[in-house]
Each structure stands twice: as C-alpha cells, then as structure tokens.
Length: 443
Ligand SMILES: Cc1cc2nc3c(=O)[nH]c(=O)nc-3n(C[C@H](O)[C@H](O)[C@H](O)COP(=O)(O)OP(=O)(O)OC[C@H]3O[C@@H](n4cnc5c(N)ncnc54)[C@H](O)[C@@H]3O)c2cc1C
Ligand SMILES: NC(=O)c1ccc[n+]([C@@H]2O[C@H](COP(=O)([O-])OP(=O)(O)OC[C@H]3O[C@@H](n4cnc5c(N)ncnc54)[C@H](O)[C@@H]3O)[C@@H](O)[C@H]2O)c1
Image (cartoon, rainbow, N blue to C red; front, side, top):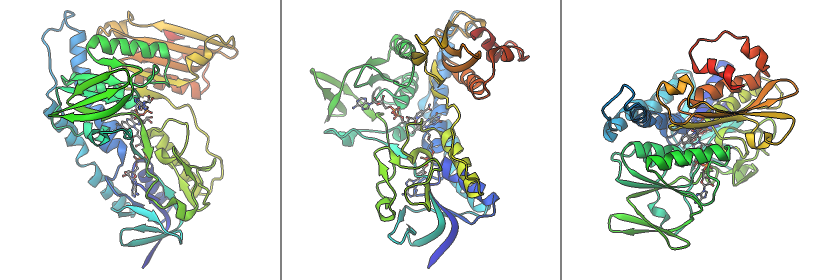
C-alpha cells in the first residue's frame, strides 16, 4: 500500500528534523525517514559531543595556564568519566528527537530510504509517495583508499572511545583533525597530526594557523606537514603508518580525518534523474535538484559553502518558506567558522589574505595577549585581524585566535551582516568588562 504525504524528508538530522517541524506548523502531512540516529550528526556524533569532550581540554589548559598566578595543583582528565558525562547528554538524543517528531504529528520511519523508478520512496516495507521530497542525508567520514584502510577509525569512533590509547594519530589537518587532536592530548595521549601538504586549515589566515601549530607543538603534539601516509600495517598490537621518504610511525590508533563524503550512493538518485557530483547533490538557487519535485539541503548539497549546523538549519528555514509559497532565491549571510581548541581559531567574511595589499581595505592586526581579558586567565595566545572597508567604515572580515574566539566572531558576524559602521558600534553601551566591550579597541 502506498502511503501519501505532502512532503517526505530523507534524513532525520538537523536539517531534516527542523524542516519537518516547520512544515507541520503549516499543517502539511510529513514523513521523516532516518536509518541511523534521529537528530543526525551534530548532536549524536558531531558538534555537541565534541564540545562536551572539549571541556577536558578547557579545564586542564586553564589550570595549567594559571599555575603560579594564584592557582596551584594540577588536574587530569579522567577519560571514562568524561565519556560518561558526554553519554548522559548524547544517549537520550535519538529517542527524544524521534518522540518529538511523532508528538508533532510527523510520521517517522527508522529505515534506509531509496527512490524507485516511479519516483516514490521505498523505506523498508513502506512505499511513500509525496508531492515533494527533500534529501537531507548529510555526509559521513571519508576513509583514504590505501592498503590497511580497514584499520582506520573515524571521528564517530573517537567520540565514543571507552579508553584513550597511549598514542594516537590523526591523518588530515582540517577542522576535525585539529579539534580531536587537542581533546586527545588533554586526555593524556601522545598525539600525532599528519597532514599531506604545507597548508592545513586552508580556510584560515596562514600566519595564525602557524601560531596554532607552534602552540600545539609547544604543548607536545607532534604535527607533521608534507607527509603522505600510503600504507597502514598491523604489527602486534600496534599500527605502523608508512609513506614516502622512509616515513614510518608506530601508533596505537589511527583516525582518518581527511574530510567527509556525501551520503548519496545508495538512495537511488539515478532512478529519479537527480544530478550529483563528488561533493553531493546539485541544486539551483531554490535548493531544487534536477528533478523539480525533489529538493536537497544541508551537508548533502554540492557546494563550496562551509557544511555546518547553522547552515543546514538556515536552508531548512528557507525550504519551509518555499513550501509556504515564497519564491525568493536563497541568499546566504556571512557564515562564521571556527576550529575549537585552546586557543580556538575563528573567521568570518573577507579573508585577511585577500584584504592585505588592497587599498580599498584597512587590515588591522592586534596582539591582544596582554589585554586584561586575556591576562585574567593568563592565556598564552590572543590575536585578531579585522578587515575594514575604508570607504564606508564598516567591518567586512575578521579572524580571531583566542580561547574565546567564538564570542568575538559572532559579534563581528552581526556587525558585517548589519553593515554596522564602526562609529555606530562604538556608540553602543555594552557591559564592561567583557569580550564584547573589547571590540571598541579592536577596530
Ligand atoms: C566530528 C564533527 C564535528 C562537527 N562540529 C561542528 C561544529 O562544531 N559546528 C558546526 O556548525 N558543525 C559541525 N559539524 C558539522 C555538522 O554536524 C553538520 O554540518 C550538520 O550535522 C549537517 O546537518 P544535516 O542535517 O545536513 O546532516 P546530518 O546531521 O548528517 O543528518 C543526515 C541524516 O541522514 C541520515 N541518512 C543518511 N542516509 C540515509 C538514508 N539512505 N536513509 C535514511 N536516512 C539517511 C543520517 O543517518 C543522518 O541522521 C561537525 C561534524 C562532525 C562530523
Ligand atoms: N568546528 C566546526 O565547525 C567543525 C568541526 C568539525 C567538522 N566540521 C565540518 O565537517 C567537515 C569535515 O571536517 P574534516 O576536518 O574531516 O574535513 P576538512 O575538509 O576540513 O579537512 C580535511 C583535511 O584533510 C586533508 N587531507 C586530505 N587528504 C589527505 C591525505 N591523504 N593525507 C593527509 N591529509 C589529507 C585536507 O587537505 C584537509 O585539510 C568540515 O569541512 C566542516 O564542514 C566543522
């Protein structure tokens, strides 16, 4: 029997879940098909559990930074306890998310979905038919295709590790490699971060990336650039990584953090004429695929935009408006991105490397390390680069490196999107002393 809906959503992650609730508010009939954990990557195996485990790094690093400045005695991460703390948050997520969808009148199917030739969606024994379908299947960790790839662990494995091994290696210096390396180091592991060229974290200001790497090395993390791992062998209880120029590294566990790939291979896109490439499903400016009944949003979309939770949520909001009758094209505001750590590295808007040497822009570089906000907890590294449009006196870009870069980058994001003149910002009365009130001195 065919079950009919206004909209069927494939993938019950951030994007799928929030669109489903929004469509119910429009009284539409909606089904969500999810083959793993409801809630998707972010709350189950991404942003949120990662940030909970990051607490270990934040606390130990803060205590270490304050030694001799009024704080004495060292603290250690107890990994199994920290993992339990994480699981208290993550374990209930999937059930609670599914329950909240059902309570809102949304039908949920805990199945893998696949389009058939008739354009319907097969979900286990159920055949679902809808006026419109939305693909929101996200991405999964990529495993480098090298001999021994079966030994690779992924970020999902890391976020569920019962014991922290003595020696761990991350291959790939992107967001995930840097963030998990910091967490593992704080938990007492000897950490190696291997990257295949000389520009890890390529989206960020190279000079500030260098500062991050220098700091990690000072802390005892082994960062190796221009090293390509070509093979993993298991010898006894250890894994031995090898590569060009006699590179050899024995380690207890090896994580592939060299990027993510879209979940598009098993959902029958060819059956329904939906075009895709290696980066995901191709869409137009209405998030519509090459089949005009089928839309796509979130991480599964082929795009150069950062693939992040707020972007997935924003696209879900756009599609909710579209299904309510709006026919505006999707436009994006500034998208801040952040590598969490101690310190965190954040950026938004025009990159400082583009502004540098262009007379149209003023590039203001600040070393904030001695400022009271950073002196307070004796932070070793606090820097910012702000790009100002000389013509109208507005901020158009910013990069921040500090333990609390997330606060400042959100303020710069608002300034950029509101096209707020620096003079007007300086007229605001902000709580003092606070990171926000520091912005006055930064521009
Ligand atoms: C380790 C890690 C840390 C991250 N940290 C951050 C961060 O700090 N900040 C940030 O903004 N972003 C972060 N991200 C990215 C963020 O998690 C994603 O951008 C976000 O989850 C995308 O949402 P989505 O709904 O598009 O996809 P997802 O949340 O991945 O949801 C897709 C869902 O579709 C399901 N699915 C896939 N195939 C099928 C199928 N055939 N049938 C049925 N269901 C299917 C999946 O199981 C999944 O539940 C992180 C990601 C990772 C991996
Ligand atoms: N804080 C955040 O916002 C956050 C955190 C984690 C993940 N994410 C999201 O998840 C996505 C995936 O993260 P990621 O870190 O896996 O991917 P990424 O694309 O950010 O980084 C992967 C890195 O691996 C490198 N690499 C590729 N092949 C390699 C090889 N053979 N050897 C060594 N290095 C190699 C790449 O050059 C790149 O720097 C991010 O792009 C982002 O969208 C966001």
